[in-house]
Structure formats: C-alpha cells, structure tokens
Length: 387
Ligand SMILES: [Zn+2]
Image 1 (cartoon, protein in one colour):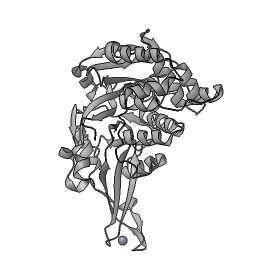
Image 2 (cartoon, protein in one colour):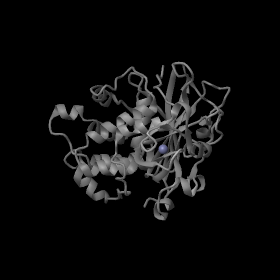
Image 3 (tube, rainbow, N blue to C red):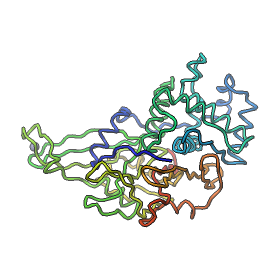
Image 4 (cartoon, helix red, strand yellow):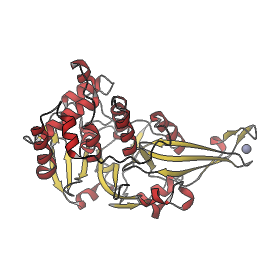
C-alpha cells in the first residue's frame, strides 16, 4: 500500500522547533474540565441531528456494538486509524459535538470538524458494520490531504489536529482541545563556557521518542525511551550554539523539563529513520510498552517543572496503539483501541473490526527479524484520574 514516510530528524531540539509550528500558546494548559451534562449536549445538538438518532447512536455505539469500521477509500488506512483514535476518545467527541455548524452548504463541505461530526453520527447509527469516510476525505483534499497518497501517521495526526483546531469557531472549544492533547515542556539551554542559560516553553502534540540512543543502540523499553528523551544532551562540535554572553559559538547543555501532561497523551515512536543517506528504513526491533505508565516513576525530580497536584495526575493507562506493518515504501496501518466504556480492546483494520486481547496488542512490540511485522508507531495513553 506504500506508506510514504516523512523526513525525520535525529535531534530532539529540531523536533521541538517543528512542534512550535503548532504554537499552542506555551503555558495555556491548566487542565480544563470537559465534564458537562449529557442533557446539555443533546440540547445543543438538536438543530443538527434528531435527538432520537443521537440517543440511539450513543447507545448502540458505546454500549453494545462497541466499534464500527471505516472503508478504505483510496488507501485511507492511515486516516481511518487516526479517525478511530479520535472517535473512540469520549473526551474528544464531547468537544466535537459542541462545534458550531457552518451556515452554508459550501462551508459545510469544507469544514473538517463538521465532516468528522457527520461521519461520527453515521457510525453511531449502528446499522452497518462499516461506513465510508469519503466525504471527509474529499473535504480534507481541499487542504492538501489527498487520497491515494500514503501518510506518516504522526504527521497526518498533527495535520488533522491543526485543521480541527483552526476550523472550530468557538475559542472555548479550541482551549479544551488544547487541554485535552497538548504536552507542555520547558527547554533549557545552558552555555558550558559561562553561566548563561535560556529557557523556553514549548507545546507539543506528541512526544517524539527516539528508539535508538546516541550510539545507535536500540533502547529496550518505552520507559527507557522516555528517560532518554528527557536526558540532558550535550550540544558540541557541529551542534554548538551561539552564546550571546560569550559572543561566539560554544558547547551547550540542552535539557527538557516536563511541565504538563494532557488527558490524552500521544507518544510517537520514531521507528522510521534516516541514516547517512536519503534512504529511510524502519526500525522494527522489540520495544515493549506497558498498559500502566506512571511518569513519576520514570522522570527524576530534576526533569520536572510541575507542582505536586500536576504530578499526582501523571498516572496513565494505555488507550490506543496505531500500528504499521510492511516497509517504509509499502505498508499498512491499523489501530488497536481500548473502549473507554466497555474496557475491551478492539482492532480497527479499515472496515474490519474485531475484539482482541491484550496479548494481540502486545504483538505490536516488534521483532528484529520480522521487518514486515506489525509495530506500534503511535501510542495514546489516557489519564487514570483526570483533575
Ligand atoms: Zn556563554
């Protein structure tokens, strides 16, 4: 199916700079509560959909059938997997249901959140085993997200998220969306020749974790990858930075402190790698990730810039895995998602959806000798105790 993988940089710093493009106002997040009474949601939605439809939808989707597939339209397995990850997240759908419906037909066709809402509603009708995302795909093509093009799931996730955010008319929903997904870190750069230090707050949609260390050795677990990501890095030789105090390029120590973690934390395992040449290859080695993740047990005091209240909420459980199989030039995506209401795992493979066991999800840990095998690429963790 030919998944084309986007360019990836080695340096953590560059990732941060890239993440700046989403510019989510650095320290916005103060963990917004998205709890609002279901009654009010129904009322707000009445102008769009019949309440009876919606009720029926919610019941059939979340209570009984659990999951509906999406047909593959023009190699849309990557898009489908990401859509399922959005739609199975009840915190996201609570926001999506409150969008302002565009007035005119043309605006409706071109509005990504609205088209997502229509698709969600169609899925929630619960009458079919799968529905077609073709209208949403057409809508996305107006924003250069074309069909028959293979995407890198991490890049497409960022593109979709930015489109959703830009096209939500209500600022309060944008703020809730930021609160739901945005990770806040503080980047420290310290000159090693003088005492000069600069700090910068950054927001990221995903934690882009290298799966190899600086000596190109495979990191062994997700926890190791996280520790490596937050480990201070020396910038010397070719990576020296200009120090305003020294007036020249000097070696720097770059470190990152974790400021805030969102309700839905998305981790990007950088399994697609450039080495020496333009040739991209996939790192398919075994890399286990836990169902329960406690950041307080992973990071040192020094790697955090957060109060006790914030840190108390850093307990996560695995919610979704977007897995890639095949090679960088020819591959396929599917998503394993644990229903937040039923607490059961499902595998969403385009139109095919089936209930699976945690052991099946663990098959995405990877295997060095099975390069074509399925490997986890994006991981979404959900806060256990939202603040
Ligand atoms: Zn200096």
